Length: 384
Image 1 (cartoon, helix red, strand yellow):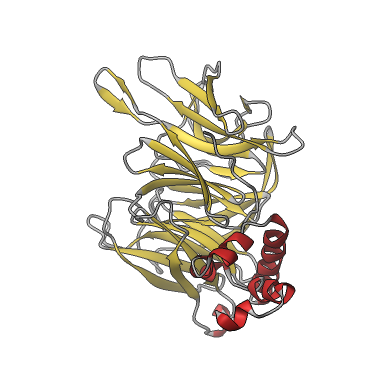
Image 2 (cartoon, rainbow, N blue to C red; image 1 turned 90 degrees about the vertical axis):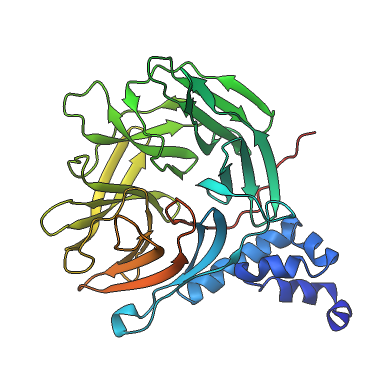
């Protein structure tokens, strides 16, 4: 510390700009001066650019993992897996704390570029979180009771692209049996909720994971007005505050099959589809075009899973794509379907490549979830 404090400021900034994301928490807690520097917009942009250069050079990417109600940063490096190199895939450490006690349990995470929308385990609070800056905005919410049954809301984060500076919003909704559905918008800039006039002709399951892309949010949904009842893709546009048309998936889905949505890079969606019979075939599809009312698809990977895993992945899991290495990482539980005890990452690639990485013991009733992470210098405004 003494030696660093004697260095010129520009040299200190150059050194600190090379700190990897996985060491950021420890570095910021070293001294107040460094913590302040990592909140300076000029410096953060320099640091984020340097992080991008280093991850590209190392042929790896950074992800956020939700494991046993805790959020972690994770380095993923699959370079050389087809030449017998071991994959690097391991939770590195907890993200910057949501509070001083580190005891906040997170049930759900919705990523919107560099910001996260977290729902606490008791579903009474939402928090908009910039892990890079360590900034949070807490919002108190309550589940609703209908005929003595507790219903939970789906909460997703997006932004209005018509503003000069992106105006972030939260969409919150719940579909009740025998009751009118509720759809609400929360605007971060005004710290206020308002009700949307929506009459849904679709059904989005509470436990279906959403993906935010270019400010909009996408889900799998069932079209209640359709006779085939196949699952389709549905978009909510945060600029117009309207749901789009039902978009076709590149396959016919039946409810005994596995289907999971993910983001690929920052401008594409990806979907995992696995059959429940025969060879347990798994396909990964990536969008070549995705808009609120239009989509087209391209197949990325197709694998016969029966000789590899011998079981069907659960829809509650998640996955990440490594385009360069033509591989996918599926996050799920172990093969003891009735009573799993371990969280597992399954690495699956071309030419029957297959590897398992043990992520540790299951201590909660939740699936391991992961999403790509790119840091952001976006400031979260605090309300009095």
